[in-house]
Image (cartoon, rainbow, N blue to C red):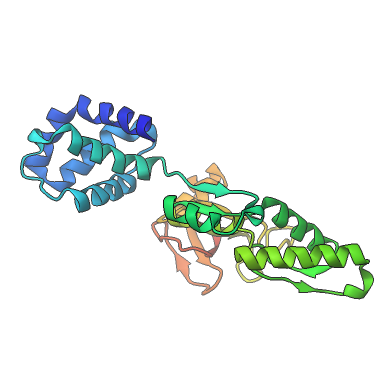
Length: 263
């Protein structure tokens, strides 16, 4: 992370005299626009720059003379940018094998650490597919369907898996993905359909597609993600839950089901 901080520090310092003038003239708005212009090639959005600034301002609130900021202050800014532009999450796989106390120690020293067990997740999904258990990804427990059809080894294996998910409060994988996708990257999941009453496509498949999009995505923007022609000819959308007609600029929410009408 120190190398990333140094690299971002160089990018910020390269145009800092102009940035300092914008902060003086335009305040916070100018500061954020300066960061976005400097870092847009790295994928820095307005939202990322705003969150980076907010984190920086909590540690350095004096904005009166940015042209006098020391390298230490600018390094603090670069570190805040790095944490939001290149967030790092640590997946501690095979956590079920960790000795007592190790997981608690890692949680304390690594705030982004998530203990997980990919092997356990795979085994649970395979057992569910075979009809031995009822399991929903991310749950911290599962239910046996019919233990009488299983041999002793299978029953013993499921008992071991039950202890693992109890110890880890799940397998950790879904928790980690949720943290990255929904909390840090601020994504939502929406479902485009052709029939808003049955929530199906033209072949009758229920909720055939789930699109992961940025929070704040509008109805017409979703249409473009489905197909360019849908976006170009967008007329209206219909909310599958409420049957309400929505316009091009209607902002979507997580879990929305939307039919898109197009020319």
